[in-house]
Amino acid sequence: MAKNRSGKKKFKQQPTRADVADRHQLYELSVQCAESEIDFVDDTYRELRGQRAKLLREDFCGTANVCCEWVSKRKNNHAIGVDIDQEVLDWGREQKVNTLSSGQQKRISLISDDVLKAATKSPDIVSAMNFSYWLFKRRKDLLKYFKTVRSVLKNDGIFFLDAYGGYDSFKEIVEERYVDEGDFNYIWEQEKYDPISGDLISHIHFSFPDGSRLDNAFTYDWRLWTVPEIQDLLNEAGFSKITVYLQGWDEDGEPDGIFEPTTVGDADAGWICYLTAEK
Image (cartoon, rainbow, N blue to C red; front, side, top):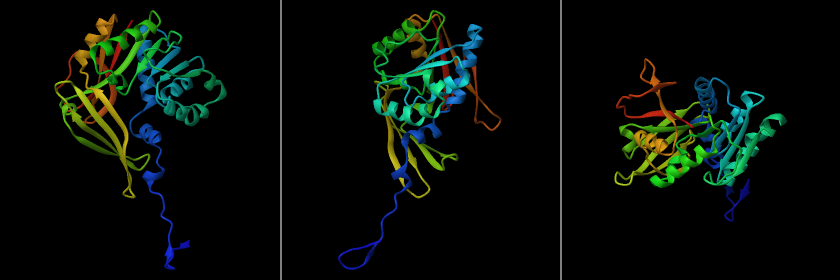
């Protein structure tokens, strides 16, 4: 405890929860469930191909949480993570990859590169989740990415991606929910949507019980692509079969976490789906 020039005691201000928060850790707790994502990818590939996939490439891999989950699932699983952001890759190596066994670490390769240019082995699966490919805002650019994915896949490979929609997705809104595991609030803000271009500016904020906030922890400058547009582009890129898997609802009207193939959906306020595109 120190004194200022007036002789009064000066108390050191304690850091807030927001001051010491790790934005990547908060994201994983509130947004990403790598285990359920990998379960869906793994089981769906087996259903479609009659065998287990071994090599997965995760585009826009971020912290490589999904890569880590993949190599932890079976001893012969290998993963390649590609992301252009060196900072998030470094975090993933330190906080996620380094916690694995030495054998598991050897089966992960993280590459700092553009997903359009990264040269990798041909995987059984390419995964682009959390709507990350929406950063391609022009049709020709997204088509180029889809063609790149198809070219890198093995002959019987499958491309997995996700999308969200519903009439709330076109609104400028703020949604908040409590995350019990970390004792904080996750806040999703759709700040601006342009119906002419389809451009969408969104942010993730976090707030804490001590009253502090971590604003703009993540900001996304995307195009809000619709499922029909995505399917058209995947077809144009040369994929042989595209399937949409919608999430169902439980008796309380909450998402049940079960994704089933379907060709018809309901006009809900918000929904999430997976898509598979078979080479």
